[in-house]
Each structure stands twice: as C-alpha cells, then as structure tokens.
Image 1 (cartoon, one colour):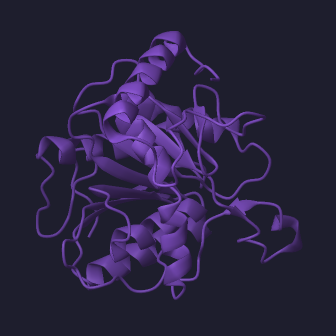
Image 2 (spheres, rainbow, N blue to C red):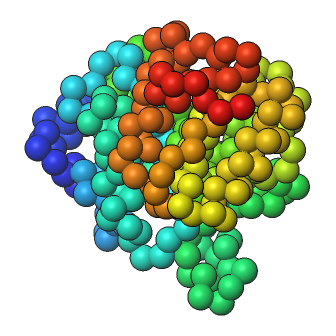
Image 3 (tube, rainbow, N blue to C red):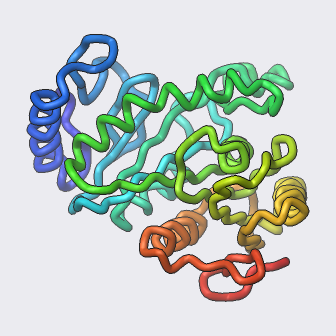
Length: 280
C-alpha cells in the first residue's frame, strides 16, 4: 500500500488500513466482488498529501478525524499534466479545517473547443446530456465509500466545491440534484441550463473574481438564473482573478461548516458572505 504523504501519514495510513479491514469484514467485498483497496499502483497525478483512489480520484483524511468529519468533493478547473500546485495548495486548506477531501479528475478532451485544449482534463458541459453527467458522478461512488470507511462510524455530510470549469459542473449538480451534496460552493463558474424545479433545493454559495471580467460575468449570470428561480444562495464578488485562492476555500468551508452545524440561514433567499449581507 502506498503511504499517505504529510506529517500524519503513517498514523492515518495504518488506521485507515485497519478501518478498511474492519469494514471489509462487516460489509464484505465491493459490488464487483473485489475487496476494498486504498490506492492503485503506479504513477499518480494526486497532489501532495493526497492518496490515489479508484476511478482516477485522489483523497485525503484530516489529521484528527471524528465521527462528524464532513467530506468535501473538489471539482477542479481545466488543466493538463498534474495540474496547478497553487490550486492544489488552496484546496488543501479544507484538510486543515477538518474536512476529508476527495478530488475526482475530469475527462480528457471535454474542453477541446480549441486545439490547444485537447489534452486538458475538464468536466461535462452539455446540460442536455444527463446520462453523461450521471455517469461521471457514479464513478465517485467507490472513493466516497473508501473515505467513509476510513472515517469509520458517524454522519459524514458531503459538500461540493467547484472552480472555473469545475464550477459550472458544481452548479449543474447543485441545481439538478444528481449528487447528494448538502451544500455547494461555486468559484468563478456559471450556469449550465436553467435550474430544475426546486424540490429539496440545497444552499449555494457563489464567489466571483471581479478582476476576471469574463468569469465574473458568467458567475453573475448564474446568480441571475438562481434569483429568477427563487433559489436561495449567496452571491459574493471579491477582488482578484479567476484562479482559486485559499480565501475562496476558506469562504466555502465556513459556509459548509454553518450548514453542518445547522446555523446556515438565508434571509429573503440570500445567504451572507462571511457575516456580511450578500448581493441581491
């Protein structure tokens, strides 16, 4: 087994192996008949501090997990190779705030609207292609099962944070309910089609970098679509560009922590931005 990286690597890896062994003894093998595993052999694209999981995913467990440790699924922006170290460092803030983090990888070629993007990894963007959307989400099931097993008993609520290209996909998941997230945060993303009917609508936080006009305009369009649908959300423009920042992750984490505590409240359909009124 490849050990997890980071100061608590040995403790978590050993504990994790024991947890999976215990769960395997209780739950048996996975749906395809194989026992649960922690990682795949070979080179990995996973960021530092993350372990390779099944179906081209990465995951990490916080240093001091509990029975209430929440799980954050991060949907990255388009990238090639091993991605941006700055983006992965920003996402790691969620680990430091006590979240288990799962990073699935998008599909190569989905953003090949320009030749130079043909090898980039991206998320589906066709709002009419529901089977593809559902198929991508279904691939996360095994890694989420593993993370739950490593965290052991308790309630581990799931949250989704998406940035840029991944922000569009996160917005689609939030407004079409094909992933059981408790709340969603979208950084510099935009709408993929109109929101579905609001049955069991979940809280959404929008963050827009005002120094990136195109990304900011798309996030504003998502804000307008949600407002038109009377979908409660926070709309929080900030300074800076289109890249995910540690402050963005901090804002998402605080939003999710309020939801987990049951203290997240909308006023007239608007969630606050770090305690300040969000824009309408």
